[in-house]
View 1 (cartoon, rainbow, N blue to C red):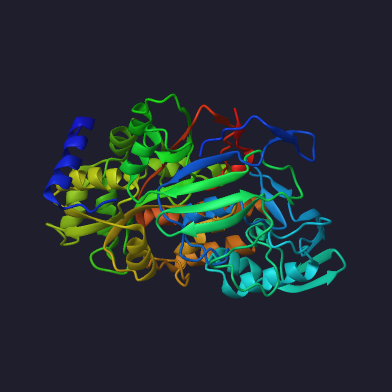
View 2 (cartoon, rainbow, N blue to C red):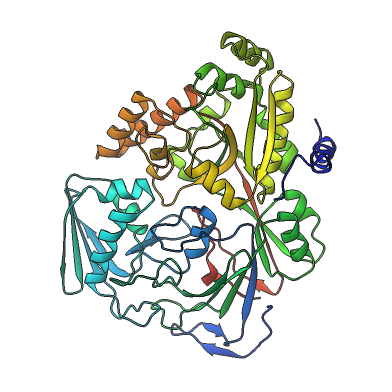
Length: 511
């Protein structure tokens, strides 16, 4: 199957009806920022295209979609936050100390930090934020880390947190606890944080607006206003970009970047996510390990990368992507070499010849639709029928992620914060976000041991063991960390990629 065949196949699907649908800056006037750099005048704005709408709730502890987190990265901050190199820098806190025994974390709050509603951040707000996050967060790995807290106390501008036992990933979890004003009840619709941009408004399925936080304690961004335009159809997004109606767009395909005709600068990176054919392990026939392994052998990952992204992207063999460096086990990427005959034999052994199932995929993500299309074609070669059902993003969240009403899906999972737990904990048997229903006592035991050890070398090895269990049992068919192509108008510069799913507005500036 070549790229022309892929294009023809996609067209055929659409014609057959079997698939669903998936303010330029104009000023030169400047003002000095507080650190001596130059910031633009008040009417400088940028318009950014988003491939999906934001979550219905913008409460930082209720956000589920990676696409919402990457935008709200600009609104919410923790006591610490990651920089572009993955190091933790002080944010709402001006400094932090960790005791030698790893049990006590002491944070000194930065003087004069203000919330977007004008109130000054206090230690009581910090304690409120930690308690509220622990009680309400949908992020199970963060909730697990916060459950290890034995006590918290505030003394003036100092907050001390004591753990029941050492937890090496605790500072990572701290970065995900957005500091919010105590007893503020409108976070879902009118979010308030401390970040460099404040939320202004949103129109569902149309746009979200942000403006610079001129009270920000750090370096003021140059861009005054940011308008995020929502496109549930990726082709419509590209059309708007190519027509000059957008200043920036990200998560583009390589073919789209090749067809840009207006001089936009394209930056290549990785999306920092785990794209896979996720299988509902709790539902026959995917409760049979042999069937899952058969699909792994029946899918040619190298061909998928070549057909969908001209070879860009990084092959994966488990639920870990390369940016995690020491935790990433590259040897697992070739655990299931393409072997149609072996795939057919495993299907026969499992009594699953003539297998037919549906891949439910969010139609607004061209990369996932393209990957699903190639997978369906490859599986047809081993006698398996994979029907593709495209759904809108909200339907995917409801049917697949929340209600587990699916056979298989192609999607990418990101890490909400810089810890292996953020990628691996969701597959523990009792985890609320375990949408595939994976249940393996050996995996659970290794993960619990990894989370409790204080020895870095031992912990690293245990996380790699957990990844190998996922691979050996074919929990899913792992594909790639997608290449991420970002297009930026020549009128702007300053785009900075992060090792997390984050889009930092604050680094953007006029060229």
